[in-house]
Length: 628
Image (cartoon, rainbow, N blue to C red; front, side, top):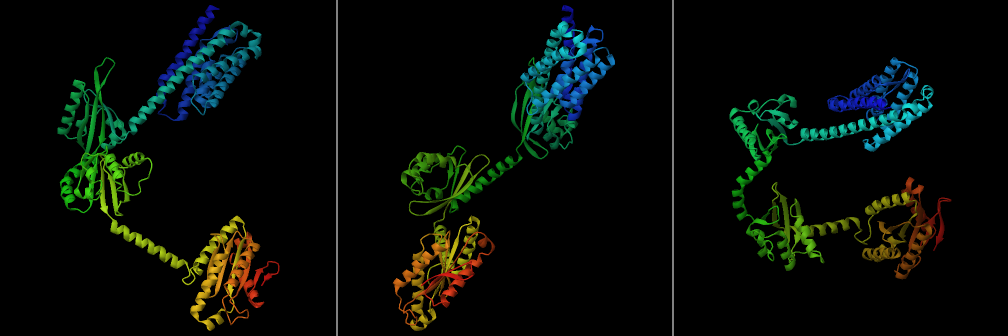
């Protein structure tokens, strides 16, 4: 029995060695396609299985005991169906070639083992497999081996389970765990390497590594673009002498050799290469014994920032002269919120807090002074410190705001942020502009009211009525709610005008419109002058019965007004009213039908003697209900 364990130990070493060799060379296959990597893994695993078979113990004539199953299970879990198929095919073909009484049983077990590995791959396909998954795989493999030895006829006849079942199962499980551990660590290293390579190659800065002679060992893609190479490989082995003028190359070489000789890093050194201003940092690279073997460099393109700094310096003097004579106030705050410059106009723009606006003052102290003096309107009551904190935080952002002072004057504050974090505020007196804006807005509102209302009665005019009618009927159609309409006409109005004159007629129209407004109670109910002596009232979400109530209220109010009309058969001003109501499909199909039906009912009321209310009926197409 000790010989079996020793023989199995050698077999285990071979399988572990095969998995370790794959871990060593798998990085090379990352550069190839997914399919090629899986096929290569399957071939390696199949080879490991064949090698294990070559080292097998012949338990009985034609029955070979080995650790061929661990590589197959691992191929299935870590390589998927493709790797499992190649590995199992190679192992099965070799077992077929070897032959023997247990050939069929061996091939079946090979297929079962590969299938277990594929099942593990499916189980972990949405995540990366872990050590626990490998342990579960090994236990599943062990169970499959025990079942094979207990059920397959040739193995049962040879009493394999009783003879070598335990060492065979245990060492296959152990080989699976060891191989799985190696593959897990390999995947972890590959991931870490991939992350580092991706970060290095895609960094927006210029990254490179040089040897002791300042020759490039590796560069990122930005470096190849800077020096107009197609691939990074073309730059390997070159030095600055191959890329730029000799004087500049000698200067850079001298600086880099100082870093290598002294072991001291060079931080934020300015370089001018290919028309670009660069900010370079270079640090020495050391081996495990601490010897400097090269250097790593990070270079950042600061061309735009350098140009801005130069422009800022050049314009500083011009700005100082301009600020003294301009009407606007100018202030500059540094990145920490301290006032570093302001002109007199800035201080005079804020008369109550001007004494606090001095160089060196912090924005929070200036705002606190504003609160104390009550200089600015609109500061919320309550937690003043919270408002100061929020206003201080918003200083370093591009914004335009308008503030009103205690005396009603207005200030425009335009804040712009520079690249170095400096905030510049420009303050202008916009009191006159703001007053004109307010006056213009009031005028616009008045014009809007004039455009939407009837000038004589003050109610909605015909044009506005048409717009509101279309919108409200569409809304009622969507909601499938009733919509009612009243068409109102003053009886014998021409005779009234002829008898009493147009001024009296205008007053009569005003009284009628007042009665109509008083007869509705909801904001959604609209009274409009439809034309001449005709008025219209529309009532959303109102049934015909509700519309009749509104019409009767109006008739009673008009009766109480008791406007004398000698030309009327009633001796006073009266009105005829037509009512229509619709809902759902009718409003969707033809909302204007509502107007036509109300007009029809109004015509019937006039025909039947005036001074009455008629509601249109859909049963016979004309007015049914009548009140006088």
